Length: 234
Image (cartoon, rainbow, N blue to C red; front, side, top):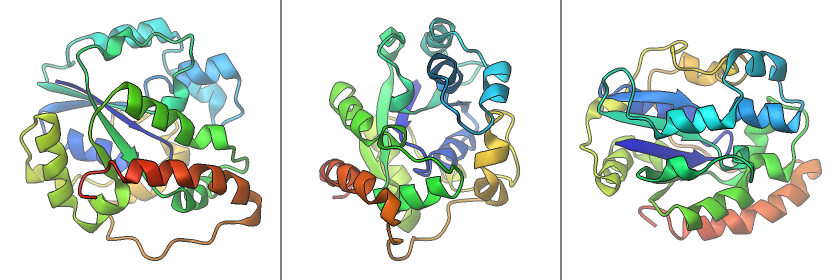
């Protein structure tokens, strides 16, 4: 099975990738189109030059790998994708035969987490509009990161049932530290998840939205609320 998990940044997406990799039957690939997107857009992301140098930057070659059978003799291939990385010129024929799922998070939490790691925040780069489009184009279960943190086993069990995969409680824990499938950007973005050995506890109240993010939040919130109405368990 080839699993395309779509999410914006700071959506619990790395912990979800670690959970699927911990199964033992699932290869993991961290944001395959990040380097091609950076190369094409010139976006001034942290470590942009290192990312482009270290990872395949040709979207056609990345797409061919996405379309291939799972690597390393694994039964499944979990691909952590971000819709905003998929520029209109990038191939999408590789999605044929994939099982799709969509991970969401409240924009107040995303903005607080993203701004802690990156000074510039734009509506486009937190990906809500693109994710709504991809949910429509590539149907599959929608799951809220808050629900996973409240009940990791229950929600991962429901997600696995939706995509036709047997659930195992091996998905609930992993070893601390970097993983061999992390992108080189992990040193900037993955500090908290590298310290973890499983999903964090349920989140508390929503953080305040900074004044400079109010417009972005206002645009993202109705999109998130619509996606929530489609989420597992809602």
